[in-house]
Image (tube, rainbow, N blue to C red; front, side):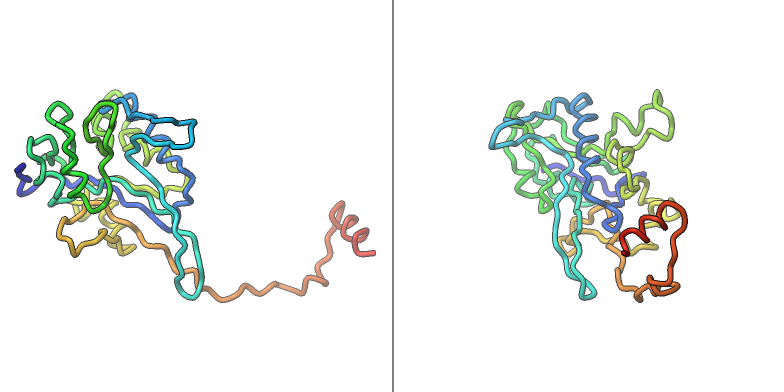
Length: 242
């Protein structure tokens, strides 16, 4: 059994805004691109152009239809490792390959120790583990440790690849261990949710729930028939109105 540190100096993690995520897959693609050439490379692809596509992806986006406030909406739900404070994937590992760092709380896999037994993937209730059949080891999100501590990168780029790539700003990175950090304040303000807290694994990552879409109907300033367009658009309007 692998032990988990009693406390960590930081609690690095992600806050994912389900209100602004549009499911564009930019985070998925950027994650794959960075990590397939990084410390956990390669991220194997199996039959990428065939009928049975498979491979290793640290981040996957799922789509759900959800009814709220009497309205239906599509929710794009990114899924990756949540870097739990009490990770079952770590405590079940027989070789110590899965471990949680005391410095920043990131959960990682030492591939040199991994024997591919898959116990960690069975223990993880979030489906965050990815088994690389070509290499025979388990892999997972690292929060881009080879990026966030890379002093050769500009400071603004020292964030996980998925965060840097998000075009809508739906992904946020920071220290949840500091209640005054921007990510902690954002999570508190938006009511950040930890997935399945009843299991007791205490995920670090938070999901910011979609905002309510209920709002009074917008009234036009004047009836449409009283609005007169000028110039070219006015000419088109007059032609089509004959």
